[in-house]
Image (cartoon, rainbow, N blue to C red; front, top):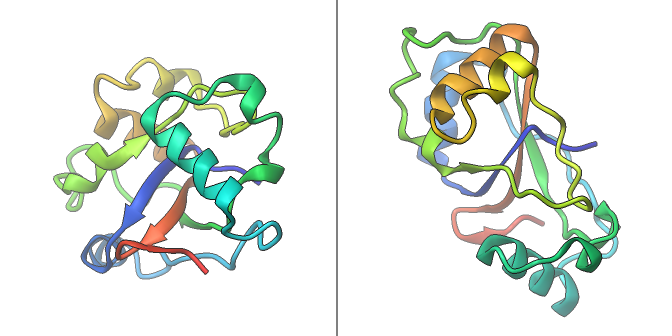
Length: 143
């Protein structure tokens, strides 16, 4: 499984805002328990976040640390609906690495990425569920 987007460090207030839009939004079960948070997986995430990871350094998702997903059900919001003014859109990223293998955006949403993140997310959400990978919660590694 992979997400459409990554939000490296989610905070409770951001989750609360999403849940105010749709009460069914929450964190998934834990994924990638092995290998866990190790020196290697921390280094991988650090390099991805810093933009220095090369494709050869992450051949597949097996070297990722534990993470969870937020799934936003299709049609939860549109560009002008409540919640679309939230700042969390700006925290989303889509690292361009073969090994991270994020779910492709629909062409209608991809044209907005990364210049208009809000439009990309809301367009994708009008076409289906949106998954966001979370690696840290409140500044702590997802366990």
